[in-house]
Image: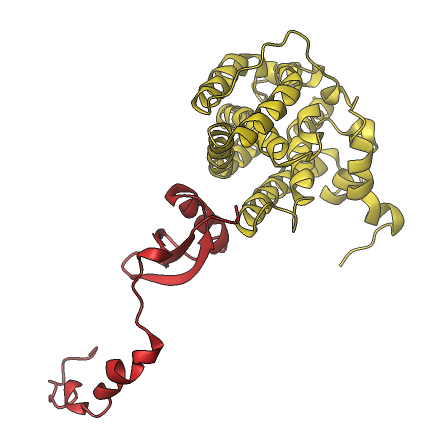
Length: 93
Length: 250
């Protein structure tokens, strides 16, 4: 059991919402990962759907690269669509 | 009639209480965090079911009976659970084997109990069946994983199944209260579940590459209140608080 791979768990809290990452767990295969996720992460009615993904399948950005990855976006305020005038009737933007 | 109904309810509910207690012993001792939570979840499902049954039994009994007096203040002979559920957590294979054998029986029982003339029992069965379907999925999966796993896991689960097999026949025995409740259209005729039980169990064991034990002599007694040597220790744990500090609560 020490060698069981790690899985990332995504739970959809209700229909219409997206699956959100809620944690990780160990399991020997996908079926067990799904059942473990059910027991560990949805015991308090947190979800209506679960995805599990092998952690190794995730390619993550390297914090060392944060400078070149994210900082250039800081002074590009024009990329936010805040310069449009919205019609009065439009309420939920 | 009323006494038979109460005894009939004990016959179902005590199984859930005692198995729940056994699983509760594993809290913090599971083989890993995920399985630990899964097994204690099952324990809590069973305790929830127990409460529904005991509340109903307490109402029928009247006097000063409550779900707590029924759970904590009976003597060993008054518990009517089958021998299977009181067997100890010898190792993980025993816990899974015991769970699996009980789950298959439990699901068959509840499926029939949904048709009971007694509305309360039918409602409890209906509510519990989703939980128990998951229990059976969990334990069957583990039977297959252990059976079809490594040489060591195969041998351990085979040993556990062989040892626990002797307690399976009792599941299909009828007490006098059972018989009375079957005639009244309230109880489930457990003798009718036997074939489906061994069929389902054999199917999973075969899938798990395990041998189906060939046994002619079975143990019985729990349904009559005659328990195995493990029961006293279990009740000592279960009842300790109420026996030491009567009426305490928090």
